[in-house]
Length: 213
Image (cartoon, helix red, strand yellow):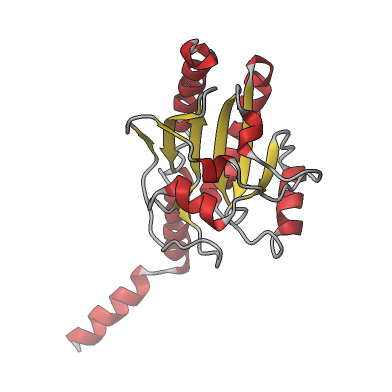
């Protein structure tokens, strides 16, 4: 009899209201917490795992020729995307996907950065890790709905591998100096800390007179 009372009490504890409240709290934690995704698209050799947003402090390295010279499909139409065409510009390369929640939350911030710094020499290229054929309509609709004014396309498998270097979470952003060096590498997105860190890295790259020579 005591066991039945305990079971009844447990059932009463999880009332519909408590269940709904718990789900709301979990959803809020997921929405506002530090977050990132992993591409599970067949073209990307990555596993499912999470990572906290961070800015890499590794020594600056030049973009390899295989990345610079790769021709990648553009979602904006026209010629393929080649990162080597942005030589002499400060470049922000963003790896993302339409299904990735943190990527979707980061996109409006990238749009703002492009509007603020484009005239000063900043270029942004967003490279989806999705299949360029299967996701073409979805990516094109995404670009329109978010009023993306910068270049958007699809990363090839080799380009994604070379840039990620084993860190498979997305979004990832790379601040590239005018002479082709990766000055900063960001993994994941935090709505509070990532935007100001990106702005700081862009300002530093734009002010780097040595890389402009």
